[in-house]
Image 1 (cartoon, rainbow, N blue to C red):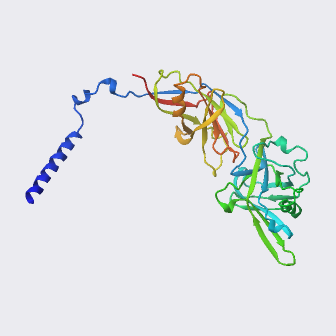
Image 2 (cartoon, rainbow, N blue to C red; image 1 turned 120 degrees about the vertical axis):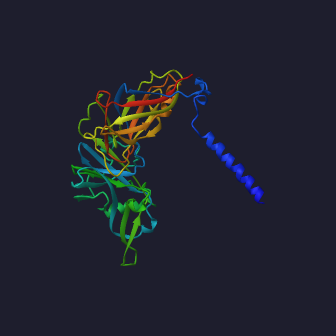
Image 3 (spheres, rainbow, N blue to C red; image 1 turned 180 degrees about the horizontal axis):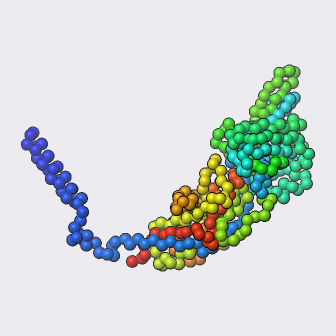
Length: 388
């Protein structure tokens, strides 16, 4: 048995020595075994954007994470809220009082400023993807006489506010379960303040404690006891608009505005690439004008890049930015490799990317990036290998 062990150890030792010899750096002879044509040649090119512009779009606010209410810094936002699952157990009760509870999540403007708004009964059907401030102001959309009001200063970003609701309106909502002549279109929250816009969590919140609640206190027939019912399940939306002139659409800055969906278009040039080059990596760097931008600390600090088709319309998302710092500047870096790979193969596609705020339908953040006519223009850096 000892002889076998000795042999095995000797073989293993020789194998290890052979492996160690293989791991040594190749000598001058070994380095020339591969022909130059088999070596991968990598080149890098950096080009600044050739043009930038700002375009207006309609944000999709069908199911926002927040509804925004208030007025601040040239913006105003109205919100709509409707509780969609009214229980029939309340049909024959006597309502004592009712209130809506909303969880704050965000602010735009002066966090210490007064928040105030009127509560109006909505009178017609609505959906988030079709509302504008003009449609909200059409006579008959809501009762012009407020049913109640809310006012508080300051309102923290992690507070629950309580809004009184007229029980006559709530009774209509309850009766609409069986009575087709009555309707439940919820309430409109119309701001009356000037210096802050607050965000409130909607039914889309993953935290059920943050979702809107309708709390009613009632008395059952043949009873004198006051009971409480908490109703959840709601639909919500908002319409934000600018009530001051828009910033200039020049090429010194790219203005991206969440809430009202102002987006940036970046025109790029890849003509310096060899035809049919293999694209390994492409990144677009956008430098933020930090003094002109307005961001919050609650949502993700990012923008998104979208691929653009032959008509200039955004068709698919390419990347979400990551933050880097270059020469003391805050840079949003986007991986756009897929776009450049397609462009190098197709001459008919526009060399454009659409840039939008990450939380476009839930905040009013303003991203202001340096444009082509500035000291920090958008820069596209491509790593590629030419066709051998």
